[in-house]
Length: 113
Length: 300
Image (cartoon, rainbow over all chains, first blue to last red; front, side):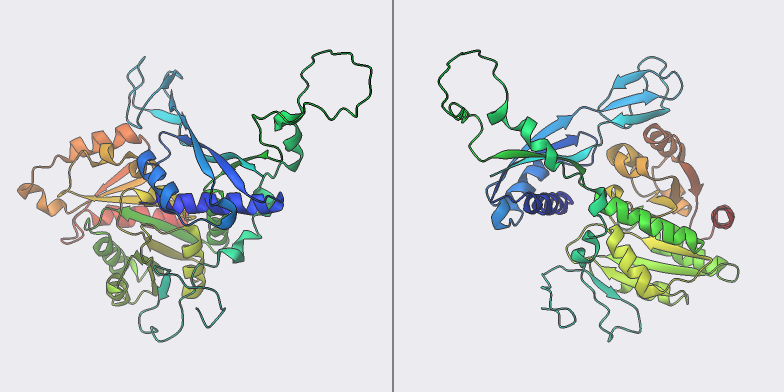
């Protein structure tokens, strides 16, 4: 549900920077989104299609790089690929883990004419 | 169009309502243009970076030694980059504006010795009742201010108003969460005093509010025993980003199939830092411990 406001935020951020770069059009926006960023990817795609666009951004395509989450165990320092906040450490089975990668929500770059 | 500033008021814009002062024009739709100029320093504009990302200009190193001088303008329009197109590296967090504003709120709260609590939960877990009971139980010792977030109605603000605590209702319209700007606006209108507790009751929603820092000192997630004990696993973002978990409606435990221990176990899997309070806001059971925590958190 918040994906629409996130997408509108992204469009604002890109627009502001595109204007400063003297762009006549933005053709592509490249995103990095962690799988634990709280973004539902389908809802995100839908929001990209339905968000109101300015003239500068009306033809911009979105390219999304998904970032796989990585957690670190506080007890044994092991780092491991995970898919949720609640996976135990595969080595020592501890739940005292912290997500160290996979909650990014970044505009990486955009392409302008 | 708003007569105050002339800016366009779109459907679903945010409204701010103080009970008893509804006639005053307190709505101030989020003027994002107000704040954007404060954030310039946070952006990475990387204007300089375009040349090395522009495939037109990379060196191919094919050493053709033609001596004839033809201005070196040939073969530099490779079609894999349309001519005139360039890439701007931004590397900007989408929530950077919200996070920056949240930090400003946080600094403001610290300077004024305000303990700010962001209360989050599903709709119907009893947040408003918990807040009413906290205020009524401690209002002789502590001063409370409340920001109420809902999509529509002032029902919750009216309930808080009855306790005597100053309250402002934010109606987010179609919005599913509060953000740092709304809280910033609301706190200014509410004129929160120094040395007080600011309770922010977020929109009832276990998903979206987890992404938006409001500048709070503590995030308190409320869950009632009529919900499933696997809720922390289903909605991990919210439980992961909170530091306090209130388990409410414990008076109903004899009537429902709910294990407090199982809930805690699930919640700790998602966030091992969580501190729990088991209460019944209705009967008052367990509220003493919560009051004790609130007083000590305020003194810190």
